[in-house]
Amino acid sequence: MKLSRKISGIAPSVTLAITAKAKQMKADGIDVVGFGAGEPNFDTPDNIKEAAIKAIKAGFTKYTPSGGIIELKQAVCEKLKRHNNLSYKPNEVLISCGGKHTLYNIMEALLEQGDEAILPSPYWVTYEEQIKMAGAKPVFVDTSRTDFKLTAESLKKAITKKTKLLILNSPSNPSGMIVERDELKRIAELAVKHDFVVVSDEVYESLVYDDKQQVSIASLGEEIKKRTITVNAVSKTYSMTGWRIGYCAGPADVIKGMDNLQSHSTSNPCSIAQKAALEALNGPQDFMKGWLKSFDERRRYMVERLNRIKGISCIMPEGAFYAFPDISGTGMRSMEFTERLLDEAKVAVVPGKDFGADGNVRLSYACSMENIKKGLDRIEKFCNPL
Ligand code: GLU
Image (tube, rainbow, N blue to C red):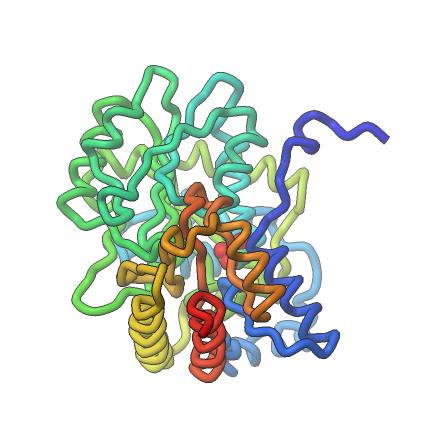
């Protein structure tokens, strides 16, 4: 059967593919260490699980409004006020089936043939494909010379009359780097001057280390807020990757357009997962401190060890749970490194090629310290055999 041009052009999600491959190898009895998955190894907190069980028992198992239940939209508004200093009304909020679905709706709602979408590189694999699926052209801005941080100066060079939107992801997947307030202000000025949209994916906002601070670009003034769609999800913050609840806030007309699209594609996000997300946002947040401390220990350990390996150098990430080392000193490009590492040393990492950086690989440290130690011992041996 002949596939449509749109679908035949899509590459599979390499992050999900590597994760699935490592899981399959484990199921086949192979002792593989997986650094692929971008998902916390902690269990979803009990109060959140209980809320879902309660929803099932109460029969909350039917359709909800396609764009999500009003209580959850309200909870999102309160969270955005409390945490991000952003004021939104429920009609400016949409609940979708995970952050990825939120982003998909945004691209479909805003982009069309002939539009350009600016994508700072390296970037999360899905952005590029979603831009292309919407018929638009990704325009890459290389950030490798500025510590993987987007600067207004480099952004300026990529802006044309066709620029429709910029994707901002801070802290970033895969680099973990954060764009700081002053630079964000300059970026916001450009967005207002050239009148393009900023899609601010803030899904890693709660995973910020040291004295760094994550700032929502929409909070920097009314003019930039009008042009921004702030994206988030409960997946990473509450270890709820499988529940699939993402959300965004932005101008009511865009939200309405996205809701119309959603009403004809997925209908509502899972009713039970919505109740769980409601508890996540409104319930106790104290568990996060402990999680963050563990991630921080793993981050330091992983990056230090990577930097001790000949041929590898790694910048210290400021947020998220990924290390993105440069492996070009090994003489391999990312695909060869990844394939050989998995075959010969049984360690799964993600090739940087799909993130727009063929000299790097991505390792997630959202796994146990024991795994991290074991995996790094193997990488060390693989890179520096006796
Ligand atoms: N966002 C996570 C990652 O980059 C989950 C997998 C995916 O959806 O790409 O690993």
